[in-house]
Amino acid sequence: VRPSGFGLSPEQAHLVLRLSRGDRVALARVLTLIERDRALIEPLDAALSRFAGNAYAVGVTGAPGAGKSTLVGALLADRLRRNQRTAVLALDPVSPFSQGAILGDRMRMESVAGDARLFVRSLGARSARGGLSLVAPFAARALDAAGWPMILIETVGVGQTELDIVDAALTSVVVLTPGMGDEVQAIKAGLMEVGDVFVVNKADCDGAEIVRRDVERITSAGPRGWRPPVLSTVALEGRGIGELWEAIDAHRAHLEETGAITERRQGMSALALRSLVEDQLRERLAATIGSRRWAHWVDGVTSGEGEIGVVAEKILKCLLAEAGEPAPAEVKR
Ligand SMILES: Nc1nc2c(ncn2[C@@H]2O[C@H](COP(=O)(O)OP(=O)(O)OP(=O)(O)O)[C@@H](O)[C@H]2O)c(=O)[nH]1
Ligand SMILES: [Mg+2]
Image 1 (cartoon, helix red, strand yellow):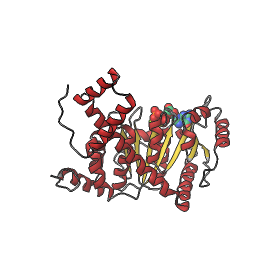
Image 2: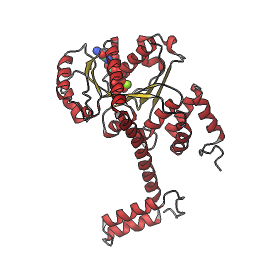
Image 3: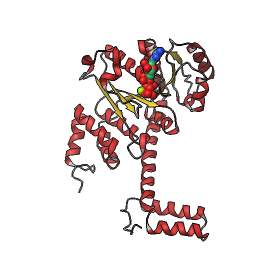
Image 4: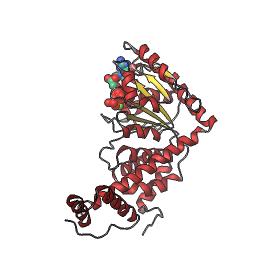
């Protein structure tokens, strides 16, 4: 029985409705459901999608400690000054923060706590099965459906998963800092390929200009003619933030004018889709491991009766054939 028509309980369907009307408590609860309950992601997204489609998401990625949160706080403060509404999603932050904490000294706590123009949320996606790349696109969709026109997504850019989730944003800002071999590190981490705008933060520290010039030297125009600008900021003091917004706006305009925004949106859908499929395959495999037929397959490989590649192929076929059907009732060993 699917009372809501989306596979949600009536309460959950009502929650989505409240969210779409701007209810912050409902939004927070939906984000928690997305973070914690994998099974609810698909029905929630189906219900949310009819309210979504108007938000613009900007990713802020960089090494731990690069100043991403400080930068996001400065970007937020700038939007507040212009009376623009902004949501922040911090994915898997080393230190989770609240709305007050992210703005730090920039604004007195009491002036931002409960400010209706801001919504800040960190998601510790490590606990969720499927991880960051599964949670990110759907959490962004929830913020979109809740009517937030601008979503800033902070992610630590260290591994492949983190690089994948830059697809959850339309414009990716890569944050670098002056330091030994920073440029080399960024190249190694694959950050150079994903940046639409590069920022050398901590420009008050030695060597910032060298890094900026080095990075500028290796950025080049992509197929659509966008050459990522390389900016300097001192996030702590709010320096260079106006220029950063200008660069983000220019990239957005570029995407819209060239039609490349469609490709970016496809990238977002692809990320969401791929994460779901991966998660389901992983889930089915996990359900199979420990079953009687699994033991049979393992025995076959061990005895040399079955070639491992052939058996693996067979298992994959079995997993795929189970699509949409309840798991076979097998006796677990
Ligand atoms: N000197 C200087 N320090 C900065 C600047 N921006 C940030 N910091 C400092 O750098 C440290 C890390 O800043 P965060 O904003 O927490 O960095 P982060 O990239 O969000 O870090 P994680 O989320 O832990 O990966 C803090 O001590 C900041 O005060 C800057 O422009 N100049
Ligand atoms: Mg941070």
